[in-house]
Length: 206
Image (cartoon, rainbow, N blue to C red; front, side, top):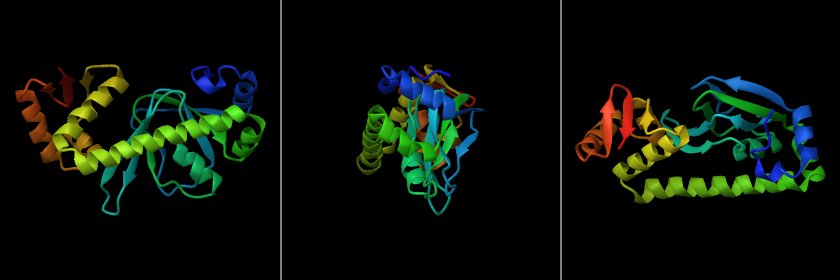
């Protein structure tokens, strides 16, 4: 089980051994749901390999991408919900083939008391997620959809470590909280501007 990619734990073999002994590793296929909205949180996930996207759904069923969770990171929403015995307010989906380490929620408090670096890890995650959520709010409030779309494509490419995305216009629209026709129109314009090249369920960033 690889935990060395978590910077806070590199100099602490004690906490790594603790996580290994109490944690459970699970594998998820691409697009498999890791956590449903309104589900009770029994364990905290740490991404070992792959990545997760975290979505929020409104009352009409429309979804919005909040942020991605990369290797070495966890979901601060899970920490908060689990600690307060609350249900999840977000949905987590495997962006690709992903391996997760699940830490039982009852272990979180004892880890915080025994290992200061665990608490520091949580605060760092909270700070990062807060900045990412501010970015989402800023994009929705102040940026046009074409700006949001090109930034979305670049971020997806960076995450996939590829210039080509295998994704439908419908999927992009769902993650950006807009209509498919809007995405299709903007992508065609971007292709005319030589920013992207479009294929069947495929977008290449130029």
